[in-house]
Image 1 (cartoon, one colour):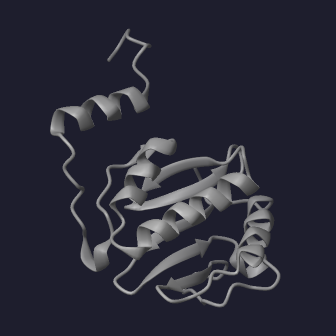
Image 2 (cartoon, helix red, strand yellow; image 1 turned 45 degrees about the vertical axis):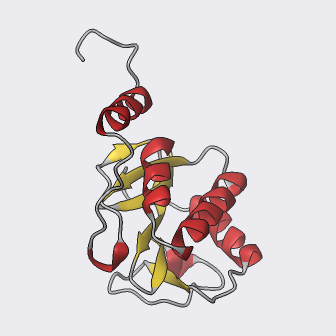
Length: 156
């Protein structure tokens, strides 16, 4: 790729996907999609598309709420989890798929008001676990996203 600046990561990902066909990513323990590390919207959308069952619609909804709330949000997939961040501030939120729920990690969640309900072994991180029949409080979620995006995040 040296010397060829016309190939963006998105174009390369589309070309690789086209060569492989429409093969679904492998699901790891708990149904978490195995997606190669990548930056931008394309790997995050690939992760969401590979989320099993009801979790896919939830993933689409969470992604849409985050983008609508923070239009300049940066995205990536690292450690088989979509991450959302602000350039120069770091990652403020991550999503991970488990067997019975989707976990939203707010990396500075202990500073949010109200504090998200799920505790973590890490001092600053708090979680929101969303199960199939849970009704997402979108107003509260958007409030947490706004607050979280204004705080220093994890290293990008």
